[in-house]
Image (cartoon, rainbow, N blue to C red):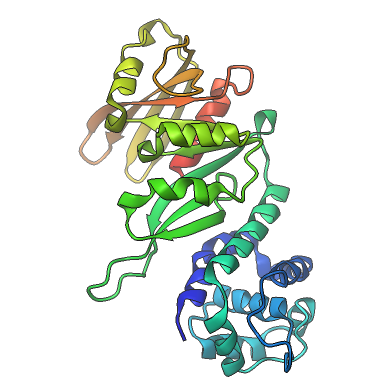
Length: 324
């Protein structure tokens, strides 16, 4: 059996751990119902188990450390009766039953369903912050432990909630260098109203900005060398005349870091669509072991107006992306 379906569940493992899914019995029933909505690849005749029950079992087993069909089947036998009852599973299935199902199931559909459930579950718990804005980071990553032998690691482009850091949607890509075409398809099923999309410089693309705004969302995008003229504009703004609006100091990992943030409203003419504010973050980092200090200026643009987000909220959103 292809391992892709178990891989899909493993990708969500850390996110679901944060939500303590196994302890929330009421949520298990809701998860089972969500998974029941997936297209069922099995023949109608001879079905003994609900689709949602089997898939919820697989998810819980993977959360418990199972990495094989035999491990999932063993988990089903040892699972607490109340947990099995909540997902509608009254007797444990065999490994062969699970194998036939998982080998036919659409991995992307399962990925989306689990991600949507995590998004809803997390948003119920999250503090949405000022003006009801929800931070969503678009970030590429290589899946930990996916590299075997000479094969390259599995690369994913993921949409991650800042609050709780739950992956709500993700798409597998061939390599990090081709993230850009996957940006819009990744966010297609997400209601962007009230969302602030944050991303690194690779996704500071005019098409991405137009897409987010057209869908009712906002953005904060870092500007680097791939947007040379825009970066030059930002660097030449009169930052010395702009008062300091936010400052943080953090210590950890053997270093002390101070960040100073300035935000200014820009006049029409900035070389990026729908950008109404420019951002400068000056980061001063001191390594305690060597006492070496480095200072770096980071620039970004946002579609948020001063009335929609305070400098403190913008700093939170930027920090939320860096913590992903």
